[in-house]
Image (cartoon, rainbow, N blue to C red):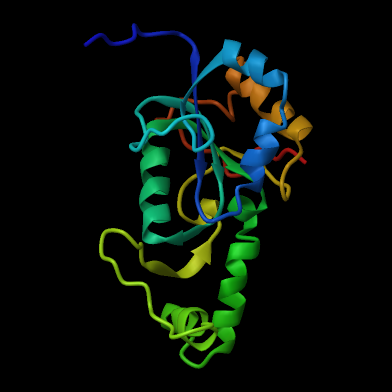
Length: 202
């Protein structure tokens, strides 16, 4: 078995948490710039580019789509932060919670206001036929009590809002990061503190 030699190329990852995949579709709308991207970076993890199961080490730039809504999302968010130099909150679900966080509003109006009320409503009260709560330990992740935007779970270096952000905006945000032209406050060694006001594109 052979392994690839180390490279100085940027290591890019994209992650999809609780969201609709619209941000990743917009990423694919980069069209011919994807060829330039391929010259700048190795896509080492992405739901649209490969089938790798475990998030890799030493990622330079990680685009994170989606809010943090369940235990799998939480585990992956913590792992990617520990293994990535620059984390980009990619799209409105990651930036604000957006549509997945509407669950929080409904939940607050219910007596008890818990995730159990959400499951009861979604899987039993609104079921077309005989409803059943999903229970498959190790397969179906548990809901968190609240849906959270990414920055409430991990430190974020760059915010890229939009529902979804346009391909042009994505390119404007990530090209400098991949080319090493990002400002020192954006792309920095993880030992340094994260700036309190991450750069915002849009």
